[in-house]
Length: 167
View 1 (tube, rainbow, N blue to C red):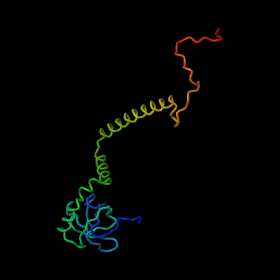
View 2: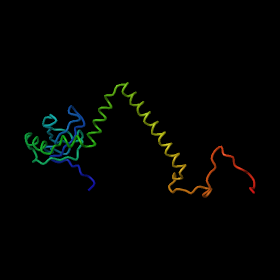
View 3: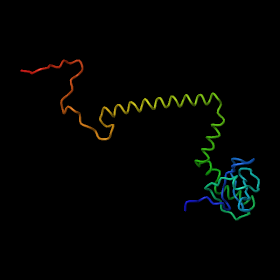
View 4: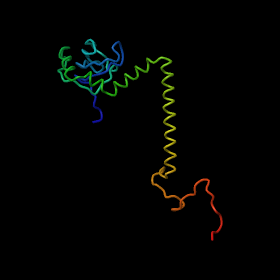
C-alpha cells in the first residue's frame, strides 16, 4: 500500500499555518472532509478545529478513542514518547537546521562560506593527489596494468646510458 499517513484519530500532525505554526498536535476527531478537531497538550496548543490544509501528517499515531479528553491525549502522548521520537526524526532535524540557518547574521554567513570554500579546496587537492597516485600505479581504471618495458629496471636520472653496441 503506497499511502500510509491517513487522517485518523490519534494521528500526530505538524501545524503548517496559523498562530501555532511548527507545533505538534494530535487529531482527536474528524469533523468533516476538510476540518479536524486537534489537541496538543504537550506543545500547548489548545483543543480546537483546524483545516486539513493547515496540517502536515506525520508517521506517528497514538492509540486513544475519538473525542477523548485532553487528559487522555496527554497520557497517550507521554506514554508513546512522541516528543522524543519527533526530535530523533529526520524531518525535525531538517526543520531545526532551517530555523538555525534563518537566524545567521551576515558575518556568520560569510564565515560559513569561507569554511566551505576551504573544505572544498582541501577535498579537491586530496582527490587530485589520490588520482595521480592511482594513475601512476595503473589502478585508475580498475585492473592494475603491467609496466611497458617488461622486467627491465629503469635507469636512474643523471646516470649515463651508453648508446651503441657493447663488446
